[in-house]
Length: 109
Image (tube, rainbow, N blue to C red; front, side, top):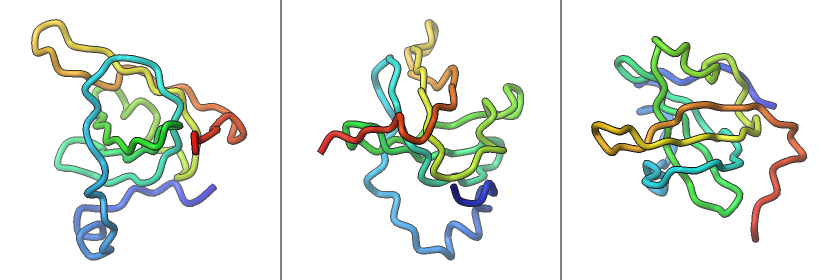
């Protein structure tokens, strides 16, 4: 496991880390993923994950839900991510995270 700290916006900008392959997920479902990166936003925490099928996604969490526990979780942790569609907006949001054992992440090659 790596450090727990999320990068500030300035640290992220200076890091040169390329996140252009990451996208917001558009489908509901449960996905096993590894936490690649965390970056603080203005009022949220942006978490970058790689799913078992190789897709790279971004999920935002907010203080009112205690960032779903992601703020205090080390980079490299494995999670079951549960995404659900909001009834009013139709947007798909991360609703729940369950931390798994590291050996439960089996990328599809």
